[in-house]
Length: 103
Length: 355
Image 1 (tube, rainbow over the protein chains, first blue to last red):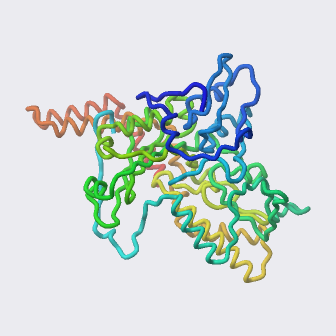
Image 2 (image 1 turned 30 degrees about the vertical axis):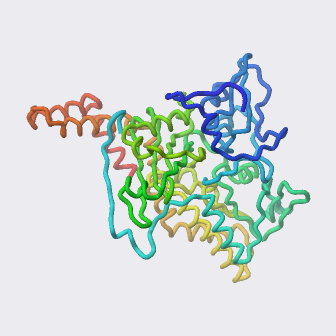
Image 3 (image 1 turned 180 degrees about the vertical axis):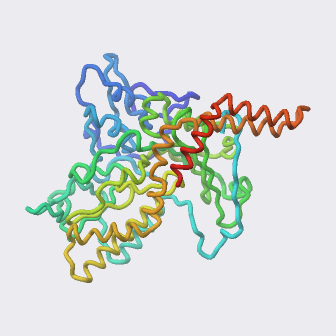
């Protein structure tokens, strides 16, 4: 994963947590896309800390970007931006995405 | 819980060591494998690694199957039972139900911590196939509506925390930061000592309750499980509701087929009639006002746990103060934290929502 990594109250790096997990990444076909925007809404910006996998980050222009590799397909980002319509959300193609070892 | 203490209620009983135990902790990846083998043994064809994209309808709007992401991947059916989980995109995009609301769905994060079986048994006082479930609330959710949980498996401990999605957005706390803080709480940390974390996961839980239950059946379709909002947030029950709604959907369809009845909306209403007679609908109806109560009374998750914890500390601390003085101090702290009318009002609201 690239981009800024949010840290928790105790400096917990989400990146380190994600190393435990197993994914089959559908390279070049991200299942979630952030629609082009100039200024993100409050809801879109909130994804930089609400996403449990830390997939969202702000770029130097203040726009929200996504790297889907660590995604749990939980749907939090979809629910939060359903009203603003700022992201496109699909499940990965059959067979791809997060593979829960335990669930 | 407050930041340094917890006040708890425990229940343990030898009576639970029955021939057929009444509840289990399960690891879904293992359970799902076992269950899919069972259904295949019963003659079912399972299509894995396939994503359903949309419902197929005939010219009258009756659902007649699904379209998948496989090449030429359509599957025709007499009835489609939608067990597509909390996100429920297929049903939502086909207009069967509306989008989830951020204030009636929770985001839970969980880690799997591994320890040798003997360590878990001695740490939690367990023998045989016994297990422990801990549900926790208080300052651990940083003022948000939510709970922490910990449960034992044979060789692992599942530990996690969940809060309402809109609360996370307003609060600014990261879910993994909240989980780290919970794991480091002085009453949780020793339970996890020396364990190895092997997975970190996140999931949404529909917590809107009875009032968020969508249309459950139509011409050629039925909804079961999380997609139908079948979660009892108060009792932390969901898997059993999913299993029960799934079983009743199956039984209803078999019953109609045996009678050679059409799987129309009017006939599939039998599913809802049968559900209404079960604990699923009865419990959700009983607690229909609870989600709103919990969401609009944040005192339950911050102030009250703090007050109860402080009261317990005042009461149990041996410091030379006499008991009457201690009682007065406890009462004073409650009235200072939340005026007398406030206390009575909260108790009244809770009682009314609970009924």
